Image 1 (cartoon, helix red, strand yellow):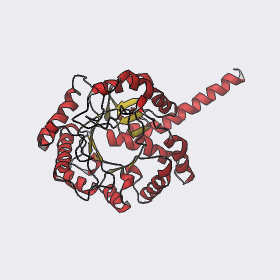
Image 2: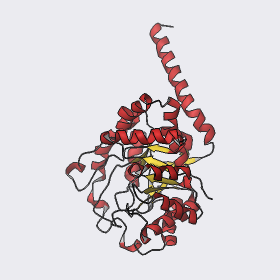
Image 3: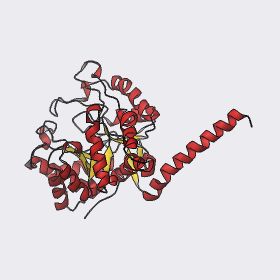
Length: 342
């Protein structure tokens, strides 16, 4: 065999062995578990390296004024596809697209982008109450938790609208007040009811807000901590995060950008020290095409985790298996379809 062919064979064998070493522990842990993507359910192990909180398209005009006609899907597709292909080239396999209904959720666009990029994309059901319910339509503002949950359960079972595309998690949002408002308590209760019926994970835009109260409301409805992803957790005080992690919640450090690298690193180090490596999720909360801006505005790419933050983790003593735990195993565990009840 020529030397060049031999070296190529060795490199391919090494790469395959490395991939098997990363996948096999996840496969054994999540045998039979699935994640719902915009192109159908896949084994949780196939999720691979995952960005659990990013955005393709977001329209902040408000629920009562939002219309799909405010943007051209082909223009969004052309603008976003290179960024998703870049993510794929960096070794990521999946991305949770966290734009809720009435903010630009577009399952058909996501399915096109998933096919073209080779990334698994996951969309959501639910309603987003942050910014004082600006993104909740008038028809839903007085609805009961049970009525809201019925709508979300229907989407989980039959698909979103006429698309047939099913959500892979529940996305909600609350304001960063000291305690939940009545309307936001209702949203959390609805998410609990929907989770109990569907097994969809509940990701709540919480930030520095009342994350432990969210856990309390879930508990009141029989839902356990591991069903809850504390979105924007890096904005909360450490003692709140550690208490939530003690109760099994997922701590999503998802506002990763250059200025926040020290905060994200400090949180990862302390969560690891306290034995909560298996509760960390890492992402950018980046993107996105904004219909209000010419050409969609400046798109923030999904690259800093690979280019800067993972190397910083290595420099601070995180092993490759620990990095795989955060970027592969934790997202698979967080977003696998399963009821997490008390």
